[in-house]
Length: 269
Image (tube, rainbow, N blue to C red):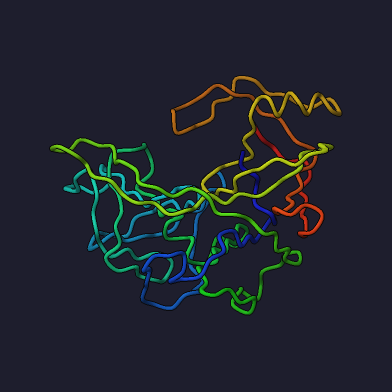
């Protein structure tokens, strides 16, 4: 289940600091450079270079635990594990390990949460731009951005482990250690008495809910339903239906103590 961004024009989503998290992460360049971005179904894209390749339009996805290149877009690149300099949003991550295989149509690659977790990832949807800050300072934001006051809602990071890479290789395509990148927060849907955990993911297009949750919420206020809807998942396209939630409140992980933020009339499936 993936909530929509917290604010309509600007959202600082992935909060961390470079060289933290137990790994030896480093980069060159100047952080907090305002860079152009595009959005397809609200998913952020930026121009990214892997090694000496040409810049290509690449998804920036906090929900992906690793950085991936789609091999059809990089002739000569083999499936498996690679190490190259990665240039993204004004910074260069030297000799970074990423994965490659033929994983999707229409996507050249993904810069995942393994890199993005080291920065405050700020997205200006209305202005078509964003920045990776280390550390974040409100003075770094473009002066012409108009948004509501920021609300800092704590979250937990979960995940991590070793994953075996797919692809067509001679023998083993290799394995990669992935860090904790799942952004977990508690949320209350509409009039629920008890909050549940949700995942915040910049690579998701909208709120996604388990059918049992939708059933538990009931047909409040004549909840709309549009059948014949397809959603893309890691298991391929799945049948779904489109609906709306009249209020979604993010609570952090200490309900009653942490600040909250609510979004009304949220589309989801």
